[in-house]
Length: 472
Image 1 (cartoon, one colour):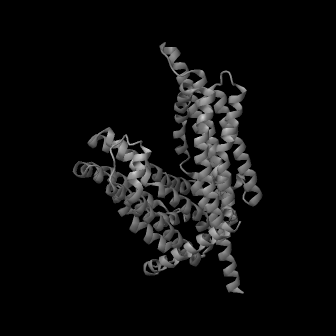
Image 2: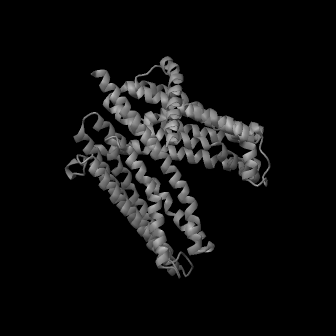
């Protein structure tokens, strides 16, 4: 009976991860398709000049997305862990406290944005100079409000994670870009003669409100015991949530340092043409990271439930499978970039840039291979809400990568610059892997020995899926 229950639980886990993977691929494809489809829509109704103005206006409030300090993500981890442990009251406390904190941050942020908009509206009048139009300022205010509204959706969908329905939340996220596109198209169609930025921003805000209502209703139905209660808002919950949220923000900060900092260094040492070559070749080589993101984001919610419920044996198996999958992606990225990278680069850039060598593309891809050695283990840290140590190392590694890029670029040109991010991976690999093994109750020899069987099982599962689909 025990073995039968364990087998049933394993099949259920595999099915949930499979659904998460499918939903993640659909979400990524939907987002990419939306980015392609939205451009002609806006150009058709706004015209190229006004579309350019809209891009600038919409970029200004986008930085506000960092102001939520990832409270939704870390609260979601805490809620899933506590539900898996059977601590429903504590989970509701985390949910209520996080919702109150996000509400407070959003109201404060909106007040600051409103005050800034009023200032920029009055300042040109006082100085007699030009400035942003009332239409642009109102649009920025409405777009800022839409960003603050979006903070709530992530917290709402965490209730789906807590009951093993993370794929529903992932699938819902795929609908948001199309809701925005639909509301925007409606606003543009109503004001065909002279559409305003205000109406367009109002449409985006309305789409976010509708999406939040859908996310709230679907997650409330899935887990009715998790609801907001004013008595469950505890100030004692706030410091831990804020600490973990700030630590989580270290990762987008580190990515920004690596992505933009290296370009600045390459520009200073090698010039603008080298920047274009570096950025384009790096983008081409990093295609594999998208696959790794899909894999590891799919196992994240299930890992929280496994760790919270004390199912360490299954957590170990999922961790090994995720590492085997990301390693396979890393090796495939190296082979793809080294063999086909230069040819694709030339076609992609219309042969208007200096050609890249197979060796240069392999160095870019080598960083992806190194990242694949710790990426899946890092998501175990996130799932357990114990990512502070990894966050510190990530930011430190990003700073070192930018710092070492200068002498490496001086000595080795683009080859040296392409290899500079490896220092970040060198810092992350030992810490993330060893700590993830401790969290899952695994040992290094068993972990290494289990990677090959995990890879074989993954290949077998993929083949069976392909055969099943081919049967249709």
